[in-house]
Length: 302
Image (tube, rainbow, N blue to C red; front, side):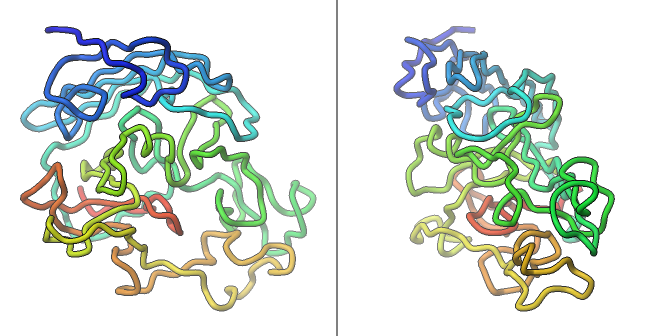
């Protein structure tokens, strides 16, 4: 195995030093590995003050599986956010089926839906909730941010509550695990694809996850690139029994959104079947979108 040195300007890693060692295989942007991440290996310092740790991850593939190992430390700048806990290294080991099966039925996974290329978790839901009688934040006011048991599920983005997310729509769990709730801007920019379909990770069922851009015609790779749209929208009126809109504007709770088939480009799991640069014969795949659900809350595979 040969080791090749790649300049940080290619990797777009903030403050990573003069160079980073990565496994030499066929190229994938500035990192090395095949286009679908197989053979990708990375270990370099992220010197962003809120990180100050090495980002370590690797992808190994067999005929049947795709395996990610890493420490969950992001490989891009983290400058914003209000984190209650510092970013800490994790022990990430996740195996995905390399040839997933679309069972065409929905399995709801509101949290821990998959992992990004850099071993950071995709975790769109929150553990926050409010009671129907809620008037504010705190147990006595009816809303809690951690270990919520009440029926109204709080969203991390776009509502009345501040979850301390940074410029990558990410924040940190009490155990130090950095995770994405929405568009992982630093990861997308680091892939350096521009306005193109950009593979950013895999869902737990093994289907790929892309960010923001897709083909206008899902089955025609020669068609124009566009910002794909979800088929979810904010409800016109709140559900019965919901806490007051005057205190908690629409979009605060997961239940404030509804799926309207055909209103956007994607299905209820923010996915569709079509061709992609990495899968030219076509595959079911998910998208992270700029609007709800941001990261999908369900999967279609086994």
